[in-house]
Amino acid sequence: MSDSSNNALVDQAGQVRAGEEVDVAQVTAYLQSKGLNVEGTPELQQFPGGASNLTYLLRYANVDLILRRPPFGHIAKSAHDVVREAVIMQKLKPVYPQVPVIHAICEDADVIGAPFYVMERLVGNIPRQNLSPELGLDAAKTRQLCLNVLDALIELHKLDPAKAGLDTLGKGEGYVARQVEGWTKRYRAARTEDVGDFEAVMAWLAEKQPQQEVAIRLIHNDFRFDNVVLDVNDPLKIIGVLDWEMATLGDPLMDLGSALAYWVQADDDPFMKGSRRQPTNAPGMLTRDEVVRYYAEKTGFSVANFDFYTVYGLFRLAGIAQQIYKRFKEGNARNPAFAQFGPFACYLEQRCLGIIAQSSL
Picture (tube, rainbow, N blue to C red):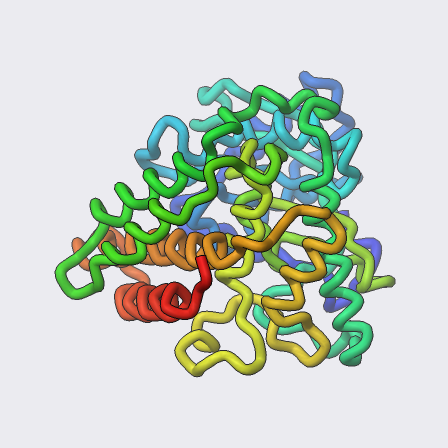
């Protein structure tokens, strides 16, 4: 089915990458067995990216649908759990309308070689590295878009997990300590000899971590501009929030700290600007400090200790980058861009130490 609009703003899928094909006949038979009205054989396309779960577009004669499945090859049992992600979205939908509708969840790996789920396609614009000029957003409208994106996160953090039946999703209490300990272990395991040891940062996080979470809420754990969908006819309107595979119960300030690690603003240094993957530097966008103040005002959560969450977010990002860099150095990841992830981890260590040196904690 063709897009209701040929608008160049609509996020587009492309050709399926070699070795990542999906058996559409099997998918179609499965969907029809679940009562879905899908007509004919779909055209299969794939969305870019895919370091995590793979995302496909199924274009049937009467409807477009999205299919998500784990990456091909060996994966850890808990990683890329698409069934868990789909169940979270299914339960969240009634109380958080920005979640796409889940149409089918297949736990049987025999159907296409892995579990998968199928959801509605949200036809809209995904703001990636830069805002499209066709959106027509001046600085004032860009600021409003920024606030609306933050409001989507704030709305999530205000929800009572029990109302969505998600109060048993994770351990909840003790989340901060588990994350500090977990990322400390992961960084040490991934460290290579040409990067910093982060020991001073890890010691500071262990010492300064809050004794109790500000609240236990559902947290997204990968909240960025390129995980939201904008209405192409009203680009200030958020019609979707995507990529729930890392969602869990935890401290919402940890979620905000993680999100701000990716938030590159206009006055950042060239190295940080080189890592930018979302349009947070555009005229009108809030600075990181403004984001924290706005969030605190809207949620009522205390941000008196936010230096901790800022450093945690940067350390977590360094851990992610270093895990990829180690795989690259060992020949298990071939993207040449990964060669810069080691120097980036070193940069993040210095940035953490700078914040620590000026912190009143």
